[in-house]
Image (cartoon, rainbow, N blue to C red; front, top):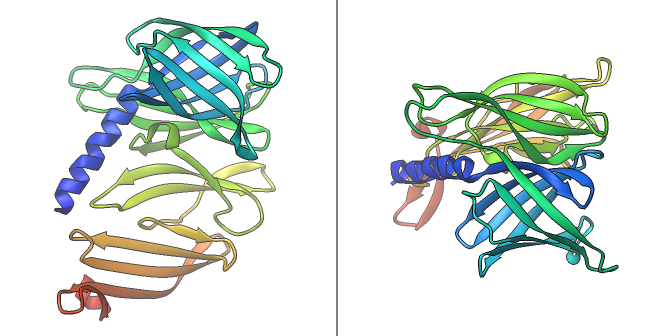
Length: 296
């Protein structure tokens, strides 16, 4: 069962990155960069005005009568639509897209024109590198792009680097080399991972059996004003800001075997506080705690 779940997730990863396409163009006279990810009759997108570089996430696209329609929401009030972006006669096979952007308050309407730059082709005997994907999350004055590379002897691309870029100037502040599975628009997450009051970021690394995943965690160094790769590691880590604790949950065998662990952070190191083992009980119809060795 867990092999089947892993296969489904693996192919979902492939489909996700394959379906995403990068465009550049204009909304009115303002230059923009946009990533569109259509799936069925729905779509997600992220775009930014290149003079400002503040990523705008659109996660509610619907394809109606061939037109792709996004409702742009106010950041603090997700139920308030501030603009409607429409792509006319949308098809991901098109090299050029046209549409409109309309401010719902002022009714100002601007023309949208987009030109395809590249997609993320997968398959055998295909090779490319250096294709960047804008991420919807940002940190202060910086935003992120992941860099993908596709080798000829590998079926799918990998994330080979993360770029940290200054907003407005587009100055590349850091390039961090990684080797990760692509998770498309969800590759980067931000959080305070070492509980020091300063936001850090992570890169999705890999998926495993069942819901198990891993990420690479980068912490911010105040002295150098740079991010560095931490030694944090574990399966499906969760970070509790109130308790300043890290929790790990590793599931196996279709959820019938579960191990958990609790950590604290000391000098940017994960220090284990305790581990637990749980196995499925047919008699009790639930997970029952066992000795740790029974989960190994």
